[in-house]
Image 1 (cartoon, rainbow, N blue to C red):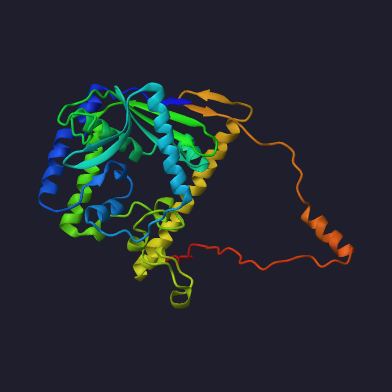
Image 2: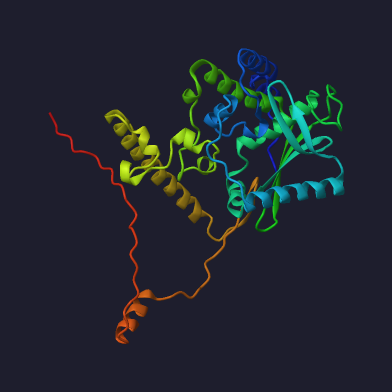
Length: 349
């Protein structure tokens, strides 16, 4: 399955885009005044606070290893090995510049490719929501490092620019083996955007400190980027202790003052309204699509489900057990907490 991005921007749009040369010069100046650590291209566009911890050399507080991570790594290596044997090119190409470093999964002249092995949920998310900007940042920076000869690999001469005209991202579902490929032309403006993102992180760490760098995730239990972050406890604090803190969350520690509380209530109300309105629009579009399926320019629509299936009739089962004189099996569970935000009545003068 292949999905190709729309045509490249016009000349006028490219002239209005960020300047790669200016972005690199600004980043050089930032790094020259500090001893901050260089980060990897794979972390560009992820979370600014996480990147800040990296450049400030903070020690990770949450490291996870195990069989799943091992299997994912081995699958990744095996797929790259198969691609190299079948089509040639170089895999796992070491790259390192003055600003950022990385390891390009596959360079098959003139295209750089990054392979992402993912769960079925992650694969479906890419199909429905598209490629995250952070992944385009990653391959764009790989292309820039190769084109400018910023390599650290015995197979390539340092200082010699390589031919790179295209970017490719391949997503492979670990569950089904299905893959989807997204392609785009090399675009210096995209690299400039990634470098500017990193420059902003360096500047904030240097001038205001790590804690001044904004979080891009909404915390554990809400954002998976936080659930799996190696700096989770450093960023959001240790897990909640119900005995000493009560029924709260890590995020609720941010609600300190009365004004914090008022802002959180109004945020909830605003996003609830936006969610309801978005649901109305989505359901309206869904009804307009009934009876239709197939390609729609860069998207594809298909229906699934709707068949008959057998399930337990719980009410009838309870009645039958009572008729037989049997005790109905039960268990104690905690009901989910609900929140209700309403408007206060206002009087007229």
